[in-house]
Image (cartoon, rainbow over all chains, first blue to last red; front, side, top):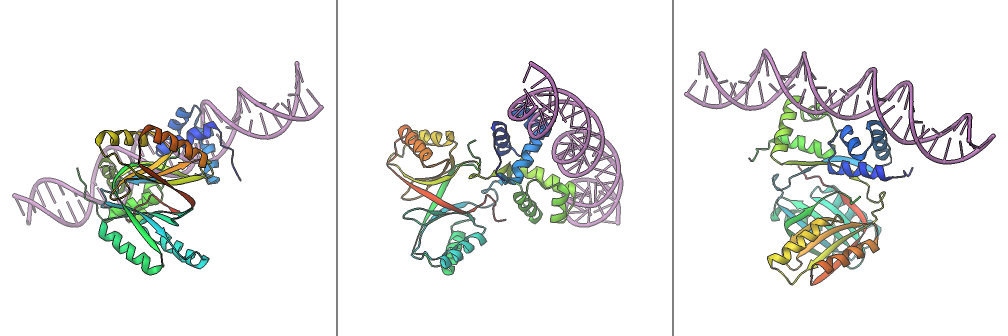
Length: 153
Length: 153
DNA sequence: CAAATAGCAGAACAATATTCTATGTTGAAG
DNA sequence: CTTCAACATAGAATATTGTTCTGCTATTTG
């Protein structure tokens, strides 16, 4: 099940993260190997789930998504039923790009990307009408200084 | 420069977001068109910068990145020089996956992915020794409930 | 109504991915 | 030290996909 990842595998992953559209020949050249072994390694890591979805990063602003909020949530309810409903609500909403359950004082943090402040309010109203939360703080992003999905291999 | 995006373009973008490895024929079938026009639309949107990097999403935990922190930062310095140094520090560190400048009380939020709590502390010490910050709060993620880079088109 | 333009389907061609085979390399057992 | 087995690799062969080209259709413009 679990796959041993060696230095060559890491180089391949780094190359794929940087540009998944590269040809196998290019990757092979960059990692100092050739086509077939690179392809076999990629296949193994895909099968093992280490390599997941292949996707494109879009320009959010150009597509009209001009507002990004980080939402800090405190709740008084900690039973399984409430949590199930809450998770379902988050997963079903496409505006929610990230959701984490936290340790400590604040219970959850969300990253929500929407067209504008009004769209955020619509989302917010819909969420709190669906599940009860104790306290919500929204942090509005003014500027995306850095954004990457790449892991530092 | 700016490109008009119609319904077909949106369908293509949605398809690419969901799986960038699809063949043009598949995408064309799904959006109800054929190869050539789909390819021309994709090329236009790439040239316009709407479609950016093509990448793969990796399993962070399988690769040993088991800790994820959200870091809330307040600063007392707001001059351009300090900000420049701060941005440079963030951009040069691969652990920092996201960085936003915020409106309001808290000045910055970071998303930092590292191997473990010790690695976070190393990062934290290095950061505060490089730039002066007034107040730092770290929120530790216990569970990644949801994570996507897809925009809700 | 004619001419021009833009977008599209389908074929032709080029490039790339995937499979297959043979060769080399490493490690362990005799 | 030699031999065998298991594995990884390079290079060729094949299949699939990307890209360009050509002519057609529809829509717009004068």
